[in-house]
Image (tube, rainbow, N blue to C red):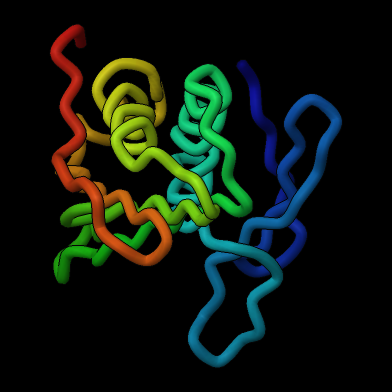
Length: 148
């Protein structure tokens, strides 16, 4: 894997990964952001990694759903270096005939066995997750990888 960044101005960078480009920016409070911050990108990467696992597992389990959303929230520590003190993931699945146990199993497998991004980040701070089906919480747990 390889990623490159080039400074545009201030704390605004343009990244390039396999020819795909985007902006990352750590702006001062009085400036307009030109892109997400590096930490926001980490949260988005975590969501995408575990989200991919979950939708693939739900397909394997033949779970029919209408929408899937995933949110990550992470407060920062007060002192430098400011790092995530914890990460909270919320899987939101909606549909008319969903087996909630299968959705919970998909999230558990991702966060205990498959998601490399979750495995790496869980070494730095605790990650907790909840699974919601049609607005009802059906599972919650802490991300745990025993094989690393």
